[in-house]
Length: 161
Image 1 (cartoon, rainbow, N blue to C red):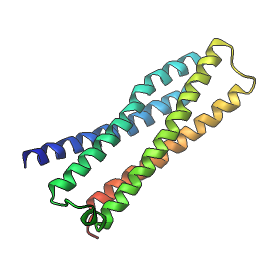
Image 2 (cartoon, helix red, strand yellow):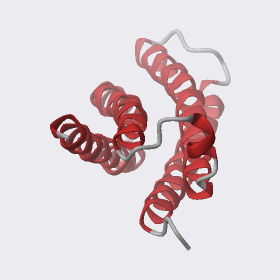
Image 3 (tube, one colour):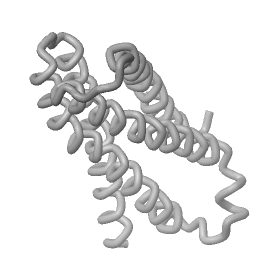
Image 4 (cartoon, rainbow, N blue to C red):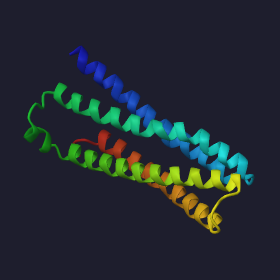
């Protein structure tokens, strides 16, 4: 039973990492949008990168410990687990959040390279237009992830309704 409690502890740590990544990333991204100096924006994007890496770590930790928690609750077979509708809904939302995070991570890396090339002066002609598109998609990403995070929390709390 000690392993089960340890797994629950790490599950809550995963929630903390995921929420810190989301909230911290949103705050840093807003600072990036407010800044007009391109060199400072490039520096902010370098700060944002490790914060963004907390999300996948937290998500992975929550998935692994979530499976461990299910086993700890006595659901040994997959058919028992599939019968829990709330869990399937929660896992579906997790997968959507994970895919959304992967897509955004790729776009965020491209944005970082674009801003760095703009600072160096060897950016393409439509660099500002590309940067604006990346910035808009990042803004949308944070709103979508926040909605998904709240949906995961609600599905966790309202398991049996």
